Amino acid sequence: GTVGAEKGTLAIMAGADPAAWKVVEPVMAAYAQRCSLIGAPGAGQLTKMSNQICVAGIGQALAEGLAFAEHNGLDPRKVLDVMLKGSSTSWMMENRAETMIDGKFDFGFSTTLMRKDLGLVMDEARRADVSLPVTGLVAQLLSDVSAMGLANADWCSLMQRQRRVQTGK
Image (cartoon, rainbow, N blue to C red):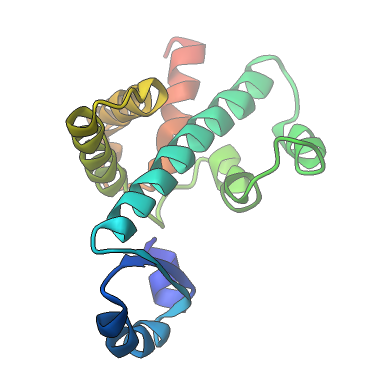
């Protein structure tokens, strides 16, 4: 995401001819922490799509879990502390749950960018005749987030949509 690019900690997943990879990998290493040749041209894009499928589902699940805790009168920070030590922990939980609880989304990978990525994923899924029901749902939920005026906010503003749905406001 954008924060990784700014910090030089990106993970690059690429598809390329091995000879071409040898030429471009040192350049990418200047702004990425990890550069991986996945396979032939196109393999990197499909790997990124696989990543976004997983991240989108985890992000929505995190929004649901935290909003569920809040709605039921639990302290979401205490719930988060327990979850970080359990089987549901993830990079998303470790790096985005606090901002989701705080309702701060003025950073990171925008709702617009995630909608674009998931649109590409869904196009490829249709082309390959692959069913992605959770990803399709999250793509629709991100459309709702955008309609709420959060198109430029970090896509984890899914939390605001979830809060609105649970409170009816």
